[in-house]
Image 1 (cartoon, rainbow, N blue to C red):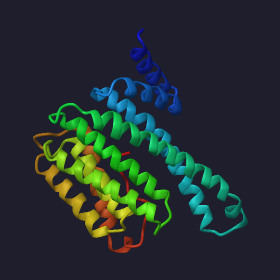
Image 2: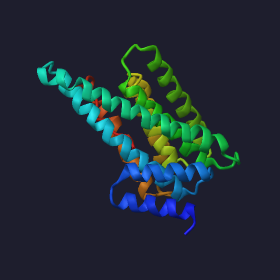
Image 3: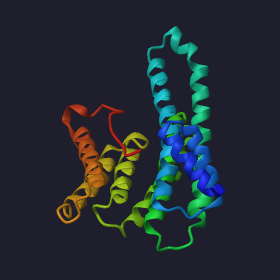
Image 4: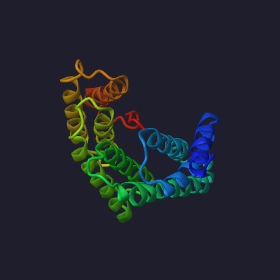
Length: 243
């Protein structure tokens, strides 16, 4: 077994055993050696870091909820929260470096539309995750927020070359709309993006009915229902994305 095959084997084994830090380490080594990834390899790369970052995001949200109570326990949890933020930011920086410099940065062919959309969407996602834990009004946060928006806009443009029902195109619409709802606090813009993506997909669904696409389409429509409900104007954190 050559080194590259071994990396993939160990990454898949780590996935099966739910050791996602190990999986991410193997995929990081793999990406450094092989910048052009197949669809399966992109999926493994995404899954590894999605699970690593997902655990930290969930932990951060739980502690942030505790802080709202302004109890002695909340005060005691501050340092713990700071450690989680540090881990989360480090993971994001690692993924963004791999995406911007090793994957998207060295994408050989402009015709590789799916790979380009995949990487741009991930860049938007990981800047969004960083923005979630930055203090409101902070200058650095605004820079991160803008980088996320730039990546999502580029992903949207690139995805226009894909079918309206393509799961990647729908995923970009879903996560970009969540970005505007959660990060920019612009509900109308979030609804506009989600509605446009959902309507376009519905127009071709009978001809291109894919299971993955149908699941993402449902998430888009669930978010629209939540965001446009009269009694949900002030509700947050229940919207869904595909990460």
